[in-house]
Length: 279
Image 1 (cartoon, helix red, strand yellow):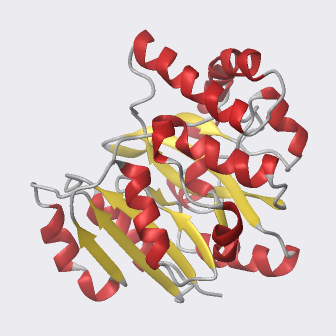
Image 2 (tube, helix red, strand yellow):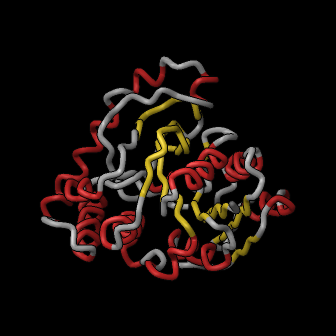
Image 3 (spheres, helix red, strand yellow):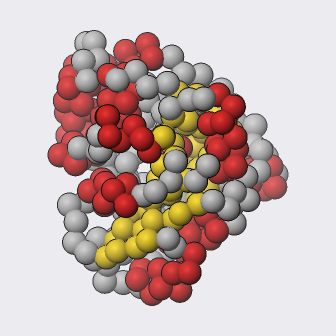
């Protein structure tokens, strides 16, 4: 199975090279890496040029944000499966994509998601949050649940039926997209119990009370649009669940670097929504 990985970039020179290398190192070789740049003015384009032989498609032009860029990438994608990789994040190890492909084949599912850790921007072994997945149940959406978006992969043919990201939801566009696929349209999903992505901490939906309130409003609108029951109450409860992601970080820090890079034993905690980062 061919996998399309889409990376949206904008002035991403600090970390983009690491993201590209994490794709290049995958054992599964039928991958097309698509990079959509928003018109960077730093060294981003030089990095893309450096690795252009390993990039299936790239384009640099002004866009309307990260999800607009991802939509552009999805329109040119030719893989059987589509996923995203933020420009400052890493695939956790070189077996991630092969494990995802094998799970799609074995479980005949429409979508797959896994586990994620947040790390310090300058130290990928310094874990600050753990996003541990849960086996899929559609009813979990009634309580503000969602998969970790950077770990979410889906069959490309679903785009024709279920559509693309709706950019006007801004920081909640990822939540709305997955709620539309999984809750509204009842696409099948399989939880792959393994670390998929190391994500650098920091984001645009947090930072101060005004950003958090604005993000909650967008979550509420996305829930209401997809007919999730008690949308207002669920949107208010949702941010507080994030606190539980910090409970077992100490256990993760006890792991040896090689364990963390390959098969970490992530402790069981309740899943919640990740902070959406600017590309």
